[in-house]
Image (cartoon, rainbow, N blue to C red; front, side):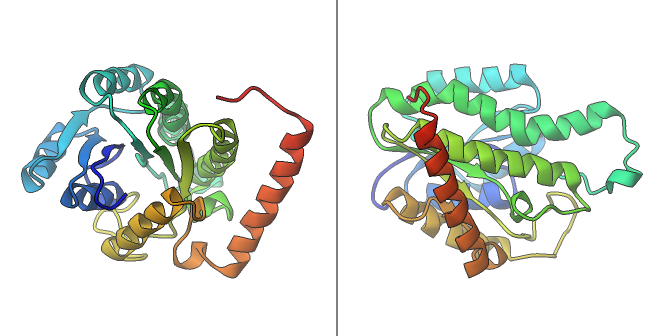
Length: 256
C-alpha cells in the first residue's frame, strides 16, 4: 500500500480504532471516508483531520446501510479498502440481561448484519475497477474465547470470524482479499467511557496497519496483537483453516 493512494471506507471511524486507522491512512495520502452515528462527533473529527470525509448514519439500520452504499457508489467508485469496524458492546451477563429485545437486536445488527450487508452491497464496487482491493473485518479475541461479560458481542464476533473465512473463499478468484483484524482488549470507549484498560490505541493501530500492509502483500490474512497473536492462537487458526479447506474441497459452491 505504501506510496499508493487508496480509497478507503472505515465504518465507526469517528473515534477509537477506526479513527486511528483513518488518521494513519490519511497521513500517507490515502482518501478516507469514515462513518459514525453522531453528526457532532463526525464534524469535530473532520475538523481535526483536514481532508477526512464523513457520512452520518446508524449502520444497525438497513436503510442507512443502503444510503451509505449509494453514497460510495456515487462519490467513491474507486473504493479499494472497506474496513468493517463499527461496533457497540453491551457488558451485561446473560443472567442479568433484562433489556428490551430491540436493544439486543441493535447490537446484533451493528456487529453482524451491518458488515455482511455492506459487503454484499459494496463487493461489486470493489471488483468493478479491477485493481487489488480488500475487505477488512474487525473481529475480536472474543471471537475465539467467549467473554461472559459481553456474551452477544462475543457471539457476533465469532459469527463474523466464521463469515470472514467463507467470504475469503468466495472471493479467492478475484483481486479482492479478505483480511481479519482481531484486536485484544484495546483502550477505547467501545463499552466504557474514559476506558484505560487494554492496549494503547496508537500502539495497536500502528501494528494493525503494518499487518494490513503485510496481508495485502500476501502475508497472514488474520492479524492479531498481543494476546490474539500468541503461538496457541496462531496454531488454532491454522488448524481451523486446514479443516475448512478440506471441507470446501468436498462441497464446492459458486464463487465470485
